[in-house]
Image 1: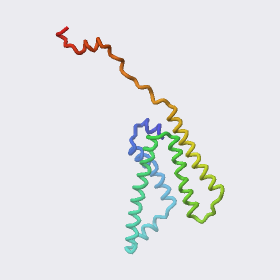
Image 2: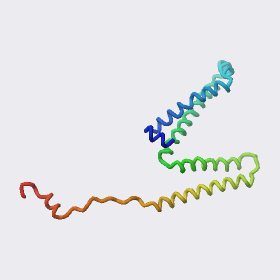
Image 3: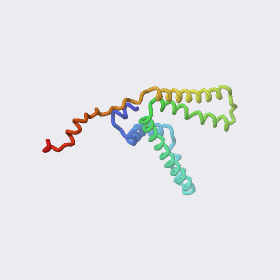
Image 4: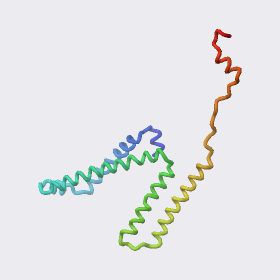
Length: 164
């Protein structure tokens, strides 16, 4: 994705727009195939469900804005970080969710689940340490200075043309 973004010279908004535009036909077709839309129109045509319809539309708008914000962050993150870092973030963001799921849901906490979370956090720490070592070991690039000016050449530059 990063290569295509650079090749086409897309900005972040362009990437989000065309990415969502490409997935829209798939979602429309799947929605038509899977959902029963006749019940939607008959249920909300009744005036007693008017408040619920407004809440539904408001929820859909908020969900759409949040989805746009999340999909806007993805190309920005790809542009500003390496692909490996982006993948690690994608994997590690599930660890807090797994911890909260272990604490709040009634499923028993198993040793395998705890070990998987610890292994994930360990992998994140090892990756962070490796990136820090890599930054420290890579030279920051040589600073190129202009060649020194000889004093006699400097004196010639400062004298006016007619004084020579």
